[in-house]
Length: 510
Image 1 (cartoon, rainbow, N blue to C red):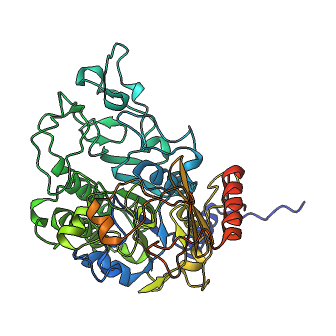
Image 2: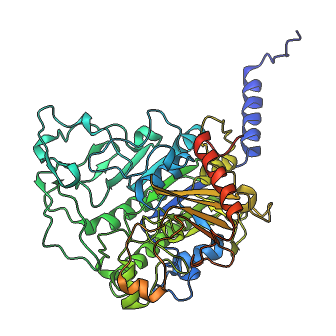
Image 3: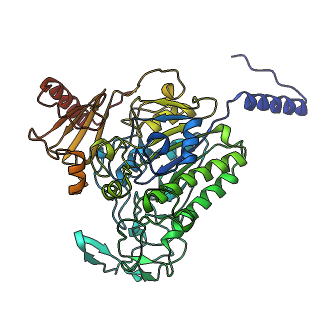
């Protein structure tokens, strides 16, 4: 073995080593920051640039789309909150683990040590932060007192009193247990405890119970669950506060250390309570004003990035966890605004409107400004794509359903990378996409029951006599013509592929 020569003068050695180190750092490409803004219950047709008939101005999101790539065929994993969030952060279809949401004081959706997007970023040297709606559970047994005796109310839900919980204790299982360095938010706006959470502790102890009556919303119902609340808690403070915290965090970041911000909003989810300065800004009532506020928030995030010299090296992703709430039926009748745009269905549904959502990616110099694609993309794909961006090598043991869409983002691929996707909200029905074909393998794709007026207005048939539906979305995006009797071989092939994906435990092999 030949030993390397060494210099006798330590100072010369130091200068050479420092010089080499500086050259290595200069040669190393700067990893981009990543910000994901995740709207809550926002429809495909609520985005102005996506819907010429929208009654809601969305200037900041329209601008974001003009600076990046807009996906007209982008999907969440589920038609409801928790499952879609789990899928986004793990690159794994939610139905491999769950179908429903985490209830008040519910346990974590993740297994201990499960691979997440935040863990991946940390492994690559990123600072990681989450602000806003978590809705993926905590280990509340860490703080619930042994002698707690909660009341049981509707659907066997537990109602804890403030005295049942030791609010000074840290609670594991939340964002810090899943790879985030910091968290600030209210957990879930309409679930107790109604209090701020900083990292893994309650900031101020609740001393009273949320009063369920006497509150006004701009549209729809109050939809709050009873439970412990900080005295004087005002839900209208939630959205402005988490926005302020996110902007403040961004303003403290430096260009030499990459960061990942996951910013799950509490809007436009019910209760629909836009802040006063946004009231009357749309022509779609209170919900429209709430979406306008969401747009403003996206603008504040972009402004913070620009003012701090971070915009050019930051990937900004805007999307939503599922389609709009059932109040959209009355909104269409009253304001002539259909939140799902051309699509059939709403939140909870396995119709397209339940899970086809706004989806924008901005990355200056990498993603073509103003690009629009109808290629299929799924939120589970974000993990593998961002792994490729950061140089993280994924194994077959994680991100079981995540495809690397970077070639599509950067224009290397001119066509779709993903040719299939599985959509599901509950255990009783699956929708399977294969190219332009869509099989809704259930008697109906509907869970959010429409009004009589809506059925008469659209002429939709609610249930299929054949027990399932087949559509070709290339010429029937509104899902009106059931082709199941016309193409039985197509149905059989798609069912076989769907069953194989469900049984195999993964749909991607690396």
